[in-house]
Amino acid sequence: MHLAVIGSSKSWYLSDLMRAANATGDTITSLPFTQIASSVRGGKCCVTSDGFDLSQFDAVLVRSMPPGTLEQVVFRMDCLLQLESQGVLVLNSPRSLEAAIDKYVGTARLIRAGLTVPETIVCQTVDQAMEAFHSLESDVVLKPIFGGEGRGIVRISDEAIAVRVTRSLEQTGCVFYVQKYVDHEGADIRVFLLGEQAYGMRRENRLDWRTNVSQGGTAKALDVSDELRSDALAAARAMETEIAGIDFLQGRDGVRYALEVNAVPGWRALSKATNSDIAVDVLKYIRSRLDR
Image (cartoon, rainbow, N blue to C red; front, side, top):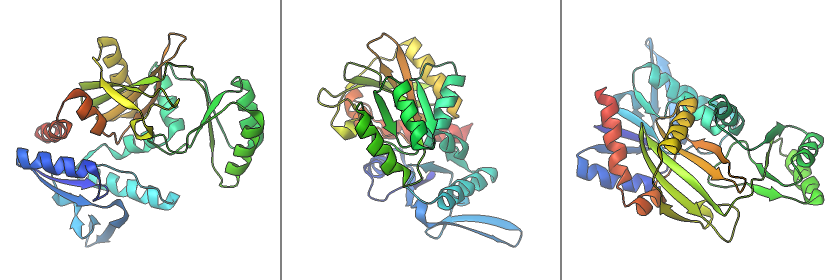
C-alpha cells in the first residue's frame, strides 16, 4: 500500500506511521495541506500536493487540520471531496472532517444521536454571550468553535472577567461557544475507534480542570464496556468518522456527557497507556478498507 499522509513532516505521528510501515511493508509519503493545488485541463481535474498527484496513491490519511482563512479551509475540503469522487479512499472523509471541526455541528449531531451533552449556547454578540453566561449558572467553559487539544479553552466563573474576555474576542469576529461547566473528578474518558475496534484510556489531571495529556494530564488504560463502546460508535456514526477519538466526561451528578468527536485523533498517549501499537493497527485498518 502506498499511503499519502497529509500533515506536518515534523509530526510524531508521521514518524510513528513510517516506523510501522517499515514493519508492514507499506510506503508512506508525507505531504502538506498548504501545498494542495488543483488543475482542471484536458477534461480532467487533478489534485496535487508538493508536486504529487494524490489520485495515484492507494489512500490518503488526513493527520492535521492547520489553521487558515475561510477560503483556504473550504478549498482544502473541496480538493479532498474531489479526490473522493475519483474513487480515492480518504480517511477521514471530507464531510466527516467538516462536521468534526465545527463544534456547533458536532454538538448538534451528538444530540441527534441520542447522547447527552453539556448545556451549550452558541451565539455571536457580547450581550448574547453574557446572557448565556448567566443562564448557565455563571460557571462556563468558553471554547473556540474551531480548535482542538484544549487550545483556546477557558473556564469563566467571574462576571467581570466574562465581560472582558467576550468583548476582546468580539474584536476578532469570533462565534461564542459557551458551555456549562460540568463538575467532575479531574478525569475524562477517550475512546479511540478504528472502525468498530475500540481502545480506551482515562485521562486525569489533578492540577487543572482540563484533562488533556497535552495540557499536563496523565493517561491510564481503560476497559471499554459494552455501553461505552455503543455510545462511542453512535457518536462516530453521527459524525461519519471511521478513525475517531470520542471524549466523554463523567460528572459528579452521575451523568456521562459526550463532549466531542475528534476526526484527527492522536494516539501517542493511548499507545503508551494500552501498550498497543496503534500505528500498525491504523495501517492494517486502511488496508482492510481498501480490500473492501
